[in-house]
Image (tube, rainbow, N blue to C red; front, side, top):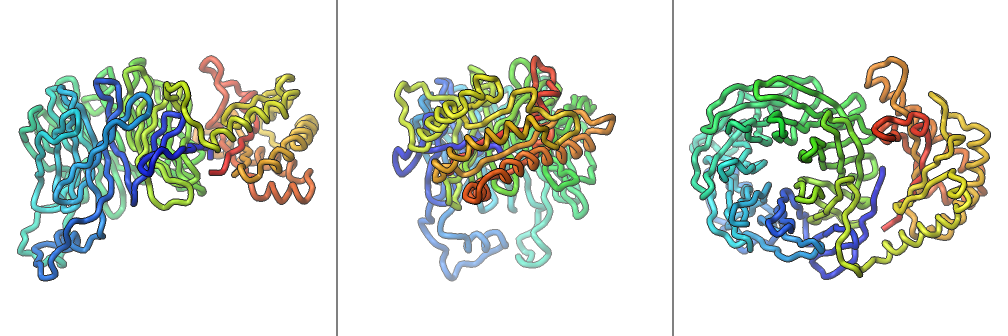
Length: 581
């Protein structure tokens, strides 16, 4: 998998930052950031949860009227508290604050108030919903704890045109407390919506659903004040999505259900500038991989556009936003057999992928939410896992519009040892391959990726066997690269050799084109890998066996020039050196 290594310099025991705009907040246990917004002073604020210890324990002679209270009493000695973090343009943390509610709680989202404060939405582990109004310093102005008598959960909070908010989530079917707490199950879920005014007054709460498990995932407000609600219905045989349009008062206008035999999961709905709506979903393909699926729908429930983004690895966009020019940016995760990385993807207005980037360590990293900033940069939050750790940390990054990592504006930002290694290795590779670079045979980037750009090194259509010119080049290339790998063995984690293809394959449909090109790209990778491996001595073969990794990327990374695919240049292999932590 394509990694951009996030190396960190410890500033204190609480958080770490890099020369890149990347802030990792280290605290005990699993912590995460789930919502993000831009402040009026152009800083970034994010909410999520941080773990804390229980201050008191349940009495041994306590009695319980339902299963939830009983199970809550058995929970571990530490739990979550809603947590807000604010960072400035230097990637310095300027504010951190936990909201210490009586029960453990987690935040799911944050939106701005006109006073530069925040509405924060979340839920407690005891099954209640929480709305907080905070001032600009995260002091609580008021809190509303609400819900049914049973287990409720919030998934999203959205800002409405009148300055109020809508919370979206689920609620279990109502049951009388006289029921035996261990008989009859805990009930099925319904979509649960609540609307608040700008001053925090609760206007209405309503439930919607079927006889199956229904979950409110997200919502978006239309120009006319009606609201589109994205939901999910789970049954024994399928997992389907639904879109419901309701009035400002929560009355149902229509509902459209999408029955699908494939495993489909909804994540996000947004209103576009033309007052249509874009949906981010995932769908499991024939190979068992999650693929990104995007829908465009209008207020009359007509599907205007539908597209699946086929990627080499399982990929999901958990959040999407629209730029002013109609392009779509999304963040989520990409997963293979080795690890999970944060995924950022840029799409055009027709949902065609323009570029993607993966960020993270060799462990589990995920982007959960994004906000498009005033200057078209992107604020992103999620979780980051340090090398060898089993605990997730809160993570804030800022990306440029082309999805590269933004830099802090400090003139003399500190660098870590590994960051210095990356720069030193880049300069060393430029010197080692200066003849090949001067002859326009290869290019080398600062992320230590090496691309073959000589037309004699491209593959012909549908071919994967190496030509004599390719073999001759790879022999010289390997002879120069192996001494570099031996010399820096302790710092190098992986040498990745990726095969690529152009997007065509006769007149077959998209699925068959993708599968055929995936197989072809893997064969090109293997042919290159095996040629280099077989032409080394035993010592070098042992080294390669520890670091080399082949992958086929089909046409996911096709070369685009002036918005048109350059099919010849797309038929290639590329190399990337990934440093160890």
